[in-house]
Image 1 (cartoon, rainbow, N blue to C red):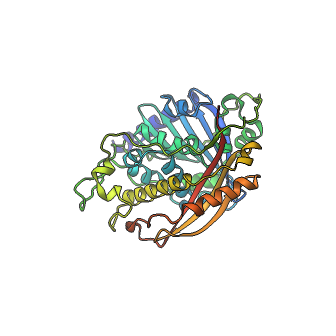
Image 2 (cartoon, rainbow, N blue to C red):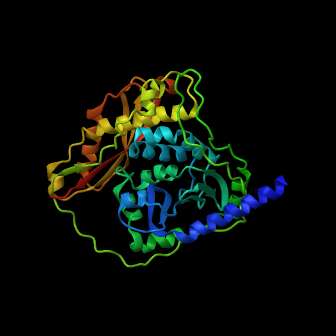
Image 3 (cartoon, rainbow, N blue to C red):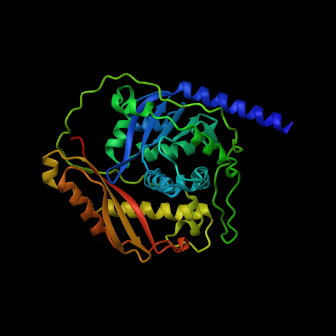
Length: 393
């Protein structure tokens, strides 16, 4: 009976996944780079395509995020986690981070080893059902909370994207760049990598209850999640639907007042879980943290560092007059005492003034708060995006 039930669940999960794929159309494709090297291609699909990020984030219709690995050396599990947790931290409120902490840990642990070139990761959302995560057509796991997909999607198209070009390419709706779409469609995982994905099963069970915190009077509240899906689908290549190839006319930016990256959204005025639980809310939680608490401590710290740096950004007046815009991404290393050890470019712009302004903002913002004691690390490296944009009159 158990075998029959497992087979039935697997078939049902595959049916839902295929139905979801059929209901979502390509919204945009973008390439993600670091140090001049492309790491992966990202594609966003939605039941209702559009160019408005907030409408896509809030829309209650099927959506999915797909990654195809470009890096010849692949992406390590640690690098994969860092890319997500930093963007998630600076695009979501603390209450949202707390609510999804255990789901985030679970998601990161689904990727159990290095991702290699042409690997295909799919994060698919179905309203009232939750989120399925698959690699090379193999379903690795399931998160039963719809809000988890929103948390991840904000990291791509939220107010502080890794780069404005990356975000803009994902928001082109039916005018996605033809060359990028063709590159994306031409990538397929090797059969050997499908077998590797199967070997990653079974995975850890998804969170189903509140996080135990014996040393704190208040536990970290997280939503219940559906049982893990450990079904393995038949090897099947997942390809993106091809959008219309017409390209929009791009109007030049209007030189107006300074507008830097949007600030981190604040929590609602109600008492948050962080305020109820000092261990989670402080910059120096006690040692011996669980995985979810350690993740939160890092994310809170990342968000605070970004906020402080953003207050020191000076958009050069001459750069505004020349209509120079874009995102500079910097590697920032901070020691345990909060001192700035190094700052170096990850992705620069062709505009020297903006590159210098971004570096100056980090140096002016230092020193920072000491690293959370519970992390027990000597230093922390962060990827900090600094956006220069022209606003409207």
